[in-house]
Image (cartoon, rainbow, N blue to C red; front, side, top):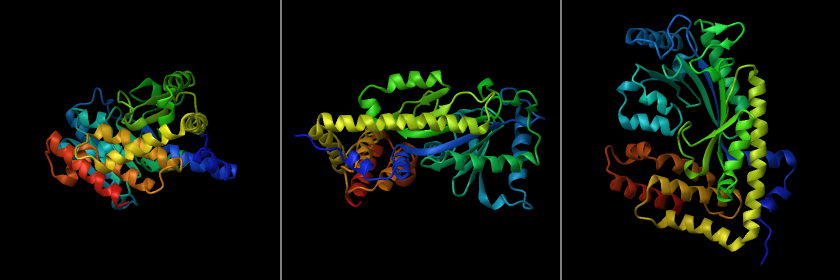
Length: 356
């Protein structure tokens, strides 16, 4: 028997502006803007030696933590090589630093604001990666935060800059504004229907790249994709953000159409898939992080479409982070084996989803 999709009911009952904002929030999990900057007086990270790296880090620390300024109380400093493997994993899982920074053999550090909305990576691919991470579709707000920090640093530090090319960076694709803007999108229907390859190809033709959960060379675990600009040279900050937002809105519309189609094609099988995933999460005694994220993706889809009503989206957001290896070991105890992690993860999932 044909039934109208709950998603159709929700879309039909909202004014366009409110509806668009709602579905942006459903599908866009986070927004991030990252600025690449290099200091004029130091070799780029590929050529920098240990003494220069130490001086560079101290220069940035002295600038941010200058007690005469207004930034010192807002940030915490992390010496990356001195962090435990679990602490490094947690920062990567929360997208506050990159895997590249953790894996680098250079002296490196990170300054992270206490509210975790902004972080500064030192000695990653460039001397500085200034990053703002926000929940939902907030690219403009993330850009404003990065610009404020960039302006603060620019008053005290001479960045490598060319009048014709703009900011000079290690990777040629970042030359210009040095900006990479990205959104994390939940795209289960596009994956289920096999449209993801076509979208990847279409985006690459217009200067947009789509990567996995943790960026370059990572998989789209849990149907989560990072969608970002590829090139900065010859484009203003506003053009980069506007172009990305336009592409993201087209992807959102495609995802919504496909969700409706999947629901109408076989309503009971579609709902059964979502509720079975919730049932497994509420009952499993052993479960891996990969399987958990796949099942949580189904539950998130059910909540977004108004099918699953007894689980809050905030619960899914929290679980998606704390079930990952670093965060999980921080909660349960360090240096757990695979089986211990899988058992502990299952217990957390059962408890959180039964008591939501």
